[in-house]
Picture 1 (cartoon, rainbow, N blue to C red):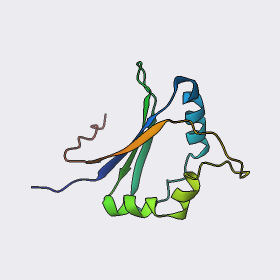
Picture 2 (tube, rainbow, N blue to C red):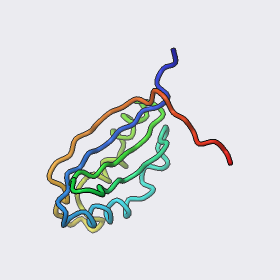
Picture 3 (tube, rainbow, N blue to C red):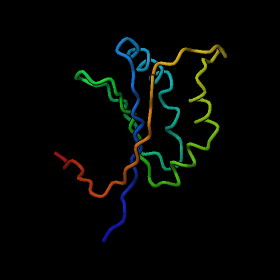
Amino acid sequence: MMGPMGVIRINAITVPESRGDELARRFAERAGAVDDADGFEGFELLRPTDDRRTWLVITRWRDQEAFEAWVASPAFAHGHRGASSQGEDRPPVSTHSELWSFDVEVAVPRSPV
């Protein structure tokens, strides 16, 4: 049997309706911050389209070790310190978050056209 084909880490973030645009803006400001991390394979920020208030930050990694190296990196600490580039504190946009962890067991790539 094959082992996992990568790992998915999802940060489920509870965001008040009035703060969603600010969350999206902050992630857009950080675009590319993780791109060069060894083992990084992809990122999505998902906005709920129903009455839920949970946004999902989905990252894909080669393996658990690559994810752990990113979390331990100075770049991760910089992006998660909660302050602007001018050093001013910014109010939080979320009320709760939790990390969900998954291994990719089956993946079906899209066939070429």
